[in-house]
Each structure stands twice: as structure tokens, then as C-alpha cells.
Amino acid sequence: MNLDKTIHYIGFYTKEGNPNHYIEYPSCNGKMSYIISCLTRMELNVHILSLGESYNKSSKPVSERKGVLTIHYVGTIASSIWLLGKPLSRIYLLIQVLFYLLFTVKRHDTVIMYHSLATLTIAKLAKKLRPHLDIIYEIEEIYAAAYRRSQSQIDKERRAVLFTNKYIVVNDMLCNEIQKCIPNALAVVCYGTYKTYKGLNYREVTANDKINLVYAGVIGDSESDVYLAIGAMNYLPKNFCLKIVGYGSESSLSLLQERLEGASNIIFDGLKKGPEYDQYLSACDIGMCPRKLSNELSTYTFPSKVLVYLAHGLTPVCSRIDCISKSSIANHIVFIEELSPKGVAKAVMCAKDQLAQSNEVTVLEKLDQDFQAQLYKLLQ
Image (cartoon, rainbow, N blue to C red; front, side, top):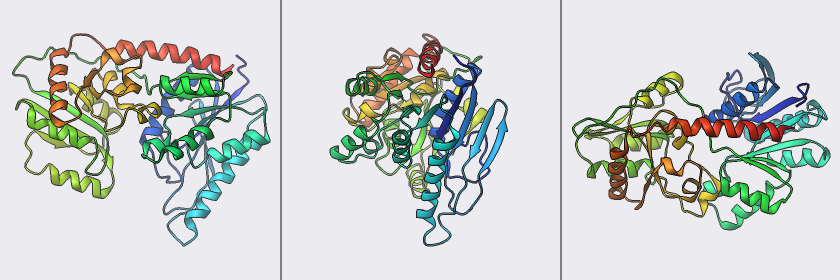
């Protein structure tokens, strides 16, 4: 590989800092951080174009050097201060992305671009204006499917992302679909972050031990997945405790607090980050992922929390959806056969019987090695 080549990674990334007070997206930070680590292990010259918008602060573009990375933070127009703030904020963002793709990226450089409905049109326009622009398009989900839009809207977004010939995608089914639509396309699968944590203790759980379940992720409305995990506690022995960590809107968190009033075996511990989050998870036994997602829509996503659970030595309990059951980690998951509180509890009891039978972290080490090799080929 030509080490003079620069890799430009474009997305809503604030893991290394947030000088312009962007609205943050934790899931985007996690996946981009992992791919950045893969790029730096290859000793490549990496520039990050960090995208974002701010509710209440206007700012100029800022560039910072963070170790081996150069990070360019786009400027912002405060979207909430005046009537035209929101549309002008978006227009300003898109102009900066377009100019970066047209004038900053050199002919032999490579761009990795995180899929966003906000910037998709700009990516396609830049590719049209510079046909030889080497864009690897990273698709973590099809948003129309994630938000349960109509099938026509899902199909429209699926067609819209087919504008280049290199992809990083979130599951095997999406990879197959892209290669079917674009026969010469190169697509590699990355389910999420394959980071592992050394020094975790794996214990054999006896009948009377306290079993710590954890639900980590977004806290949504009354139909959120977290309430399936909460409901399952009614069917589990008293030595089971459910710990909830995550983030959500003010109304969603208030609803959760109301539902947990009087519950002695369910705890909400707010949002955890970094080493505190790692330590929190490593003290648990079973990771909960009871996704309320139709099997058809699972083609366009992958619940990254399953990998986080595995990385911390937990046994994941997950809905039986194709994006997981047809993945390389299926043999390391306990599946929920009936998506109800009672069905979730039954799967938890199965997971309890499997605790500490093997160190599942090794599967992530293999996935990391494979992805690193595939990404190397994609960048050539």
C-alpha cells in the first residue's frame, strides 16, 4: 500500500473532543473509533472530518492534531437562536462537506464516509463531479427501516446508497444485497466494534449466586425494547437483578423512572462512558438485547450492543432476527424464541446455565483480524 495516501474519514465523530459543541451520537462515535483504530494500526495518514450541528453555539471550523490523527471540525450556525437557524445550519454543514470532497481530498486519496441522510446527496454529487473519487461508503443502517417507514421509502434509500463500488456494511445480508445490485462492488462486513478487554474474570455461577443482567442502550418510549427486559423480571427468581444504563429523551427517562418505582431488583444507573462503562459491564453476567424488530427490517441493521456484551465476557440474550442468527457470532448467542416477557425470561434462564462455559472473547479477536485484512484490501 502507498503510505503517502491519505485516508479521509467523514462522519459525526466527537470521541476525541467536541470544541464546537455538536449534538453527539454515541453509536457513531463507537463504530468510527474502532475503524480509526484499524487505520492507525496500518500506520496510515488519517484525517477526520468531524461533522455536527449545534443548538445554541455558532463557531468557526477548527483543526486539531490528536496523536496520529488530524481532526477537522466543521463550523456551525446555532440552529435554535433564530427563525432561519435550522435550515442555515444544515446548508452550512453541507457546503463544508462538499468543498472538502472537491478541494481537500487529493486524487489518490481515499474517503470513508459514514452513511447519513443529511450528507448522502452531497456524497453522490461529489462522486458525480469527480468520478475518480475513491469513496468507501459505510452503511451502519438503512434509516427508513430503523424508523419503520414505508417499504417505498426503504427501497428509495436502498437505491440511493448504490452510487460507488466500495462499501463497509453492518451485516452479511446487506453485503449480499449490494454485491447483487453492483456485481463489481467490493463490500466488507463489520458488525460493530471488535475491541476486547483483557483481564476480565469469568466465574462459575452457582444456584444461589446473584445474577446481574444488564440492558445497555437507548431508552425509548413505552414500546422500547427495555420494557421487555423489565417485564421479564416478573418471571425470574429473586436472585436476578436487572441493571439499566443508557440515554434517551427527558420524557422517555421520566417514563422509565415511573415504571421502576417500587422495583427492588431493577436499577437505572444513567449513562456510563469510558472506563466506568467497561467496569460496570464486566461486573454483570448476562447482556439483554430483546429487539422489537421485524425479521424483514433486520436486513438493514445490527445491534452492536451484542458485540459489546461479548467483549466484556457477558452471555448475550437476543431476539432471533436474521442479522444475528445468520452472522458469524450466532453460536455465541442465546436466542429468545418467543418475544414476550415470559419468553425473554426463559432465554435468560438458558443463558444462566451457559455462564462461564467458555471465553467468548476469542470470537471477537478472530473477527478483528479478518476485518483488518479485508479493510487493507479495500484501501488498495
